[in-house]
Image (cartoon, rainbow, N blue to C red):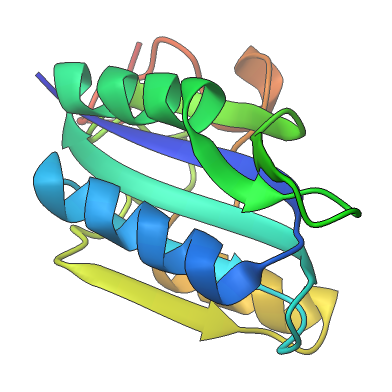
Length: 148
């Protein structure tokens, strides 16, 4: 079963290496991804990752994120991701009434945004702006047809 997921990563201390790792994992697991981030330096914040793929592949991605060394801490020591949150994980095609389903992603893309408005526009472009926890936020139980 294909799913889509939105993950917020608080920060990346070594962003170039971290982003390469995420892209490699997505490729190995045959997942598509859109990585949004707010700064262009070595440390970036406000990271949002939209991914689509088979349920097992997304589960494996999340396991790697928590169990493998992906970043460095403030002292430069390699570390695992401990500051990420899954905002949404749902079957592909699920959407809130009044909104459209997420666009099908292909490959990997990273995009820098300069403001919250620009980030929201990028998320809206792929149909993933209105996601989060709870039925009110992202339409739990709504099928691809838009009904319950």
